[in-house]
Image (cartoon, rainbow, N blue to C red; front, side, top):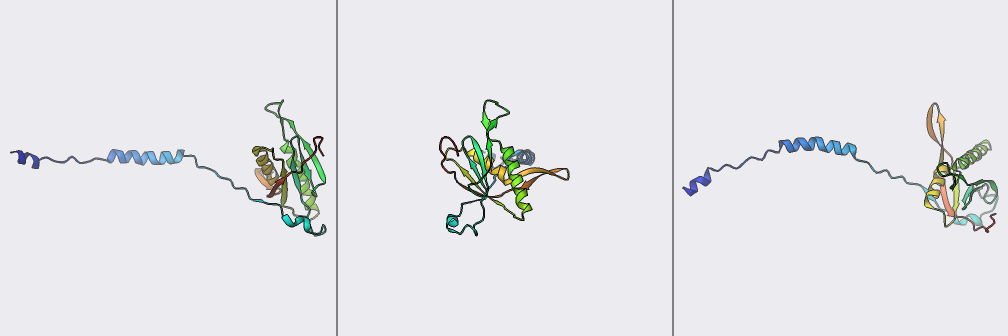
Length: 178
């Protein structure tokens, strides 16, 4: 009798229909709400080590932006100041002084325009920073010199300024400035 009872026992079927329905709904919802990471790569070049050895007539003129603690210097050619851009009061916190990247962009746009009028298509720029320059200032400077926003046929687009960016150390200045 004991053996007979065991033979008649039925195994229960596994019903996964409701679980599959849940997965069919859950997977697309999770994929749609997922935040995809965005990685931006900046192409940078090092200043040419042999540039000092070349003759001055053959050497291309270098456009420089020097990040100092209180101002930005725009030089063209290297070492000859075009404009000094002093820090301005922040709109969020008037007691805090920030770099004037808007004026830097306007200055570089004017330089680009003048170079194009002379038939020079300059795309490279050298950013020189102090050792104490913070990362955000350096990135904001690189973003400013790379391109600017302009309106083209009722659309706002990024126009190219100087996308070929090189980085270097700023010359050490005395406490009184240059």
